[in-house]
Image (cartoon, one colour):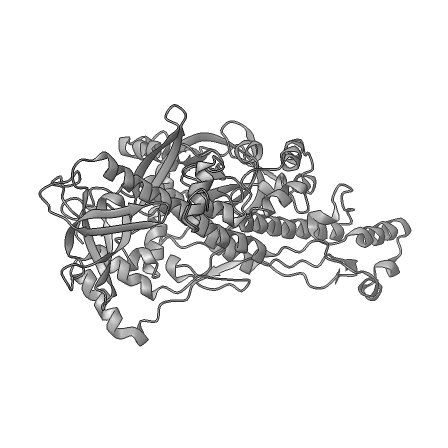
Length: 606
């Protein structure tokens, strides 16, 4: 009170800034969340120890395949350091192809197997390890406007785990063949731990350039082959009802970045408006329909998006084809029980029948070429995504089943899926060894398979030494063997952390979006105005509408000063007030005769 600060949350924040405890742009949402901002010394220590970990159960069991002969590409943003996925194309000969040349893509008798290689994070952060516990404290990498808070320490996420070029890298690889309509051939799916070597680290822009110049169809023909497959996959999913077909023109989104400038002692803020990576039919129309502010969806984005979605569907289909080993005895020999459970992401289809009037209105908006209002209105039909161990369709993706597993460096649940998959493969291999009379390798630990195998080893060794069939008889084994679970994979724990991180990321994005606008207002002597489009009515009594501001890539609320507004109506709005700290932004009608954003641009179809 003596300092004359208001007894409010804003007053408390201002006081902390004045005292130098917080910076001007302190992320209070992050502080309130309790999300670990930095790694503890102990976590840094165990991460360095993990770099030298030589224990590889998949190599010991002969599961890790050498795929270093494949040409592997990674496609990411320029600044990406934690690279967790790579892709390649394998040429398969048909039975009547007598050629020895496996590099010629023009032989029509050949078919392709598409490979998705995902960083084998479980190799470095196995179940029960101190490094995994560090990741479990976070559950996900946190992507803020100012920085990225990684799930693993940088020496791991950007080092040994990351699929960097020209080094031998551990991966979990999936190979799959496609039918001519883009659907997956279930019997073709291969899943294996692997060793790969990345030949090319490419950015999205570089891949687009290679395709534009023709290099992606000649010297690097694999890129063209992957684009062809991705195009078929997109068409296949759209044909099965995916949102790309239902909402062909999604609303772009402004992505704000804030980079600290030491000389200025403040952040430089930049804005890029992106069309969602999973949008539309992956075409950018020319002419009046273009959004002059949004980045077009590129062929490289299509490749990566479709390859990763295909991997998610393929792993689900592969899982459903696997057998569950429930009994502990087979042909008089002890066997490890083996059951694989995966977290399927499911989304029920929209209920159009019971909402016929709304459905007709959505169709009307599309027929009238009111693209963004149509995309906004369509959201009300989408059901929430559910996670279940039972397989089921995912409407939004147009898939029969889907499992997320392609970002284990960034998401705990993906890493948990890796661990579960590999344990299943290890148990399967151990059971095969037992059937062949081969002892379990001494270096395989109970944690490697998720259950206590001490007693099993004793039975196998005793049987081998005494050659006594009675020891491995079904009745005795069933009666005596107990396979105690030593580590249970709880997918809900990882999902909970991911859900908790979303509002933190949203708060950071929102704050810096408003800060970007505030600076535009402060730095301009003219009225700051933007062209907007009315998306739809939110509150009829208050005449409150959802709007989209083109130049900001921003969806916001606007209270009409002139009464009722039609969907798709264009408005020029000025910033009436903006307060990033309070999360406040209001617009009012502006004159189109002035303002820094009043240039004559071709506005997109609403």
